[in-house]
Length: 141
Image (cartoon, rainbow, N blue to C red; front, side, top):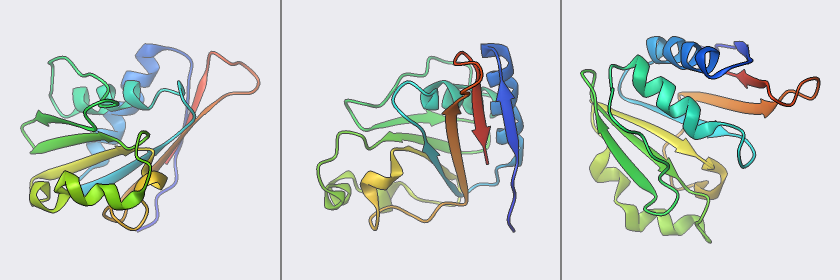
């Protein structure tokens, strides 16, 4: 199934609403790629997706430890940030195959850094700054 959708978000509240809508579309297990420049809002969107999955705790960027784990009613969400990888083969040391199950959701920032070593995406999300208004974001599924 090919799904295309676009959100133009002008506020944190609208980002939360977009994330909750995205969460309602996800079936576990799934792998979601999050593309966007530094500061585009990938982690903010991840927080909103987790909120839509019923998670209410703190959500932090996994930039330094590469993977954060969150338990939700639907399953376990693994939020990954591959920005700091020098070589895609470094993924092998993360043990992703041990994390994958019928109750897993992978949300992967900078997936291009893990090309060939991460699962194929069920959903590809691109976040861009709106050229017409740089405080807005365009989220494309």
